Image (cartoon, rainbow, N blue to C red):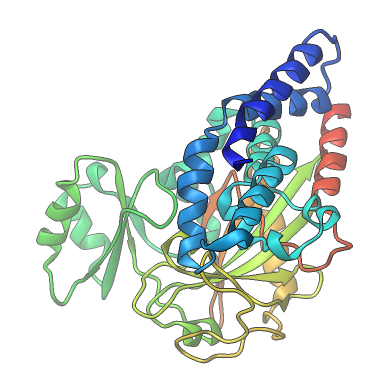
Length: 370
């Protein structure tokens, strides 16, 4: 039997389960999660996601031929049906090498969407993270660099603000995934030319003085700003660190984002120790593939200071922002924030005894009873 023949079966079962669920009066988060997931299960584009997206990722890894590839597609489909895993989850979280109990501990893309809806439900508050200008304003104490909104400043003010900057970086005011970013060298382009170039994009852009990273992380990949993602969750005035990972760019890249080819190294957030890295193409990375700098087994310097900064920053968040991913820049003699994220993607779990989905369910219960 072809795997594709199972799609309508899953849709039918999900629709029956959803119909049964909607007859109940319960309104707690467990019911909401079931309704959320079953609805997506019914609407899920199996044909596009599995037949196209998943197979493309298989092909990129040379895993798209033979019976084993067919079984892997079936395995993925079941991972979606039971865990809400997208193709990028399946590969980046190395599900093909993990048992089902271990897989169930992960926060997949579908689970993350639900967590964001529950923990960060206030759209006005969420805009403080999505809008880079609002973020820089609210957390200015932790930014440590000059910035401006390009269409809110004159050319003369622009030149005065950045007169001492060797390089400038322009970013979309609202954007993710490291897209819409450009770096300008002020010795090669005049301020007027840079100003007009960014202004001509006809959409909100912010311009910042380019942060020249110093210290160990700069040596890992000098072309990019290599950041540490720390996720905090705050309920009833108590802020916990949920997870952390190191993000490094590859040779020639100006961003460290995994969607732009960067590599993600999970960090034991209790100790600051770095685990093996991965992206969508490579796994079990111990050294940076270009610079050769050893990362696996190393400990992030000033780790407790980094965590404390993120906890303090969360105190400035308004009500309705419980879950925040902070992008932290570690320099030789400074720690600063680059930006925040209201839907931070969780990395793979290195320890099979660690259960992030179980932890998040406990937090959801705390939030509901608060």
